[in-house]
Image (cartoon, rainbow, N blue to C red; front, side, top):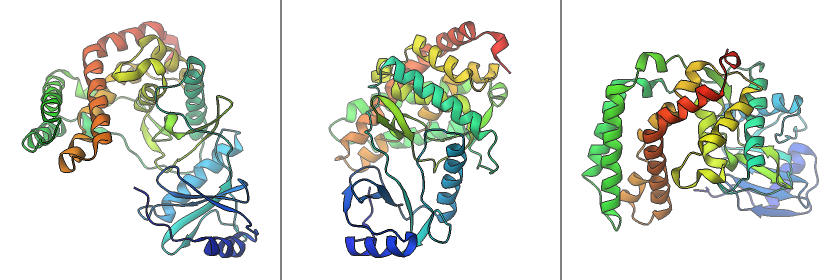
Length: 343
């Protein structure tokens, strides 16, 4: 939900003149994303007012990452420095930045063609390779809590508690999905090798890399945006998740194994994956999806949130596919990606 802006047109003109010594003659409010965005001077600049939950430390981290990637000619935004040499400032308790306008458009999930899918894998590979060299300590999000039987038990109990509260028009469908997720969690708890899965590789990455973070121009990526979630994380999760959001053949919770293989191969040209990254790629994504009640919980609390429920339904379809086909996916990946390509 977008928060009320701290700016009006007069204040924007005053603040930009004071902070950047730039004269503003045209302002247009943009309806995109969760931040308050303004196009300035006929799409010359973008003024971005972040949600109040973000600290200046978090935003400065994002800017440091983007500036590092920009130096290596990766497809990222360009921030403007204030007259005092800063890339962000605080105004009425909100963090604000100014960046060059990026001409382009966004795409919906699972609408990309094959070449665009491969481009996504290539840019992710370049990004992760570049972030290996960044002189900045990124926070760690290793998902380790997911590789624990106690956590799985907690997830099972969380779903069981939600079952008691199910209501609304889609009650039968929700109950069926939640019961199915509980069964999958029980099976994983009894069959997954929790010692081996902890050997997956953590790498610096975007943290929320997907087609939803791309701005396109002439059917190619013009910029990758929103690095606020950047962290050191299981890279196999970032790869398979980003694939599942972009390939038009991955609609309705289906993974096209041939295309996933090509996606992983393209990434692997830039950053080599370990055998454990390959082996547990479908399982780490499955565990993360199964542990979440997102969509169902929001709808149960407010039956008007149909869009979030539909997203929950989609993710459970993906869970079912991954659960039924995880071994096929990993066998295919291991067969197609030769041993010499691993670390």
